[in-house]
Amino acid sequence: MAPVARGFHGRRRTEESGRLPPGQYLTLDFPVLSAGPTPHTPTDRWSFSIDGAVDRTISWTWEQFLALPTEEVTVDIHCVTKWSKLDTRWRGVPVDSMLHNVSTSAQYLTAWSDGGYTTNLAVSDVTGGKAWIVYEYDGEALEPEHGGPARLLVPALYFWKSAKWVRGLRLTDEDEPGFWEGYGYHNHGDPWREQRYQGD
Amino acid sequence: MLDVPNWPGHLAGQHVDLRLTAEDGYQAQRSYSIASAPEDRDLVLTVARVDDGEVSPYLVDDLQPGDELEVRGPIGGYFAWEDRMTGPVLLVGGGSGVVPLRSMLRHHRASQSTLETRLIYSVRSPEDVIYRDELTELAGDDTIDVRLAFTRTSPPEWDGLRGRIDAGVLDDLGWDSSPDAVAFICGPNGFVEFVAQSLVALGHPPRQIKTERFG
Image (tube, rainbow over the protein chains, first blue to last red):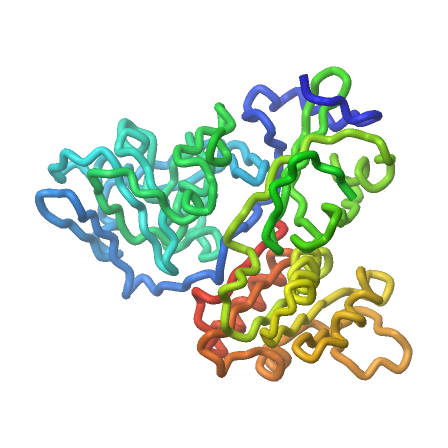
């Protein structure tokens, strides 16, 4: 049993507490916690590609991407730095439909972004209705600070896996730790099992 | 000042997670930058009191010697002083963002680093400056330069930086002409974002700009 911090009471929020994973607190802000400067890629120079261990590479220009069928989703998001934000609203293209015409036996992928950021995921983490490439937040174009023009959205995992400024998914036969994973953050990142750091 | 049995040591710039457990089992966790250098005997955290915070008021107002907390770390190997860095180093801190930078300067001194290092530390008023005397002392080293910038009120007869740090200040004081220069920027997000974008615009390689944002 953890040592009791003498006199600590904390602040209980019973209404949402069932929706907060262990160790998280509710925020009404939308904190920005990127590791470096914010990239600013104009949409006329943007493209998104799926490559790596695939039968053929596919890519989309911004116009082609916007022409894909999209969904609006409302999800809770959880950052490894302990804040959670509930009922965030996004619009984007399901990763399922982007992978639809891709033939692969790869079980992993690396999402890579402008500025050099990467994060690794199992294909099963981004398929079956669990991930989107989103370009709108709360009804407006996604701002660069929050990952615009487009970011990956994987709400079931800690938010560092929802790569900002995403430009592609590279399918891989081996699981290749990405940026934060290489700095000691957990390879999988399930907030409900509190998988924050390696060894959790 | 924490006494952590079996503390494995840390890199300047890293942080720890603190977890507090109330008597009924309720827990809250927060991250705090380590203020002490790896060479310091004691692990020290400097906590800024957030008025409506859940954890910091307890740590600042109620915590007493002998109290127990759970500590996890060190965490974060990215925003950290690496001894293999070769370039000049620019440290830019806004408010409590100076905490990990202070750890870096202490490490610079303790490890007898020869890297040209400049700290630009932005605060609202003189009473907001932390580590005032220590920073003055650190600046006595030939390779360490410390510049305070006051955005709201400055001390009487202040002839240093006034107002928000702008591109002109960063142009003057940054190391943009050096290809190995590394910048560490820490503080509130708006501050960090502005400084980072300005450095990029001045030609500082983006991959050599590291940021730690306090939300």
